[in-house]
Image 1 (cartoon, helix red, strand yellow):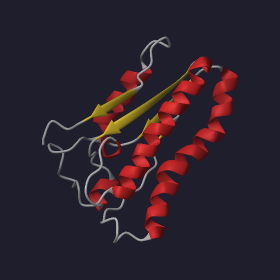
Image 2 (cartoon, one colour):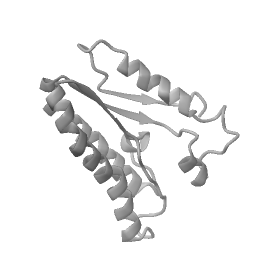
Image 3 (tube, rainbow, N blue to C red):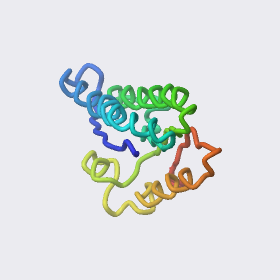
Image 4 (cartoon, rainbow, N blue to C red):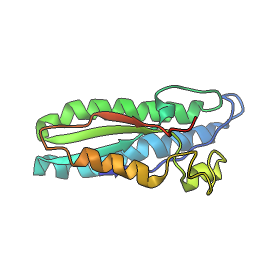
Length: 153
């Protein structure tokens, strides 16, 4: 299972409306919780599985105007690590990935990437390669976390 749904908005802590903060937390944290809560019993019964939770480099360090998004992505990291420690005994691997900007509809809409940014930001296929590499590991091995950055500053 890959938990990749997310939303973002940027603005100062004081200027961002409570409703927008709540929407970011609901989508990025509670969305992951609800999906995992539904799927986890099947993985436990099967005694095997992979859960890949997508956070962000914004979940590793906060930045100005990203408080809501960063808070949600920090929460994803904490929830993932706790879950990983709970379900390892069930042969379930939980991995948290923290990419920098990927050229996606969301990043384009936010103005942090554009459709012609192939050389300056990560592309979806770059990130897919990382996910596949983790899944290809033998079942005895688990990629706990990984950050993927563009080579361009």
